Image (cartoon, rainbow, N blue to C red; front, side, top):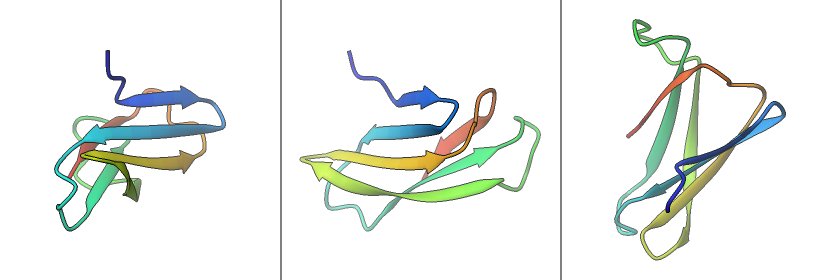
Length: 68
């Protein structure tokens, strides 16, 4: 099973399967599903064939996120 994130109160690691030839992959973190502006945006790095990963420090429990 593939887990999209690994959460702890100190940091969250986001993981995504996407084509390695993509220009970039971002994760955007929002306070709620109604929010229109992200509280935080982070770029993911290629860590293997079609695998991307990025670490965001801080406690993001209960937040909503999207990948771009």
